[in-house]
Image (cartoon, rainbow, N blue to C red):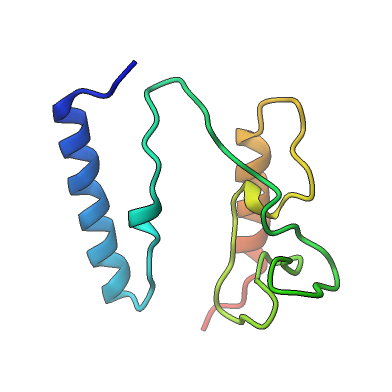
Length: 107
């Protein structure tokens, strides 16, 4: 099912707003890379930046989801999973994000 024109406009406005807020906070977004899927579909990929206790390369992250050499960037989605389970992963992603956020030192 294709998204309606109104839904696409709303997503675009939300993306622009979020990007502005992120810039004010000193962050960047990957809004241009956003993939918009119809409601109920899931095209989530994982394992692109697997988490390990000793990252050895730019495509691995530490246990806080930081790509090697980065200090204040944390990946908190399924991209850090070493593999994707055959089950629904939304709760696992949220649990991992909560675990990382609770351990990141506040500046």
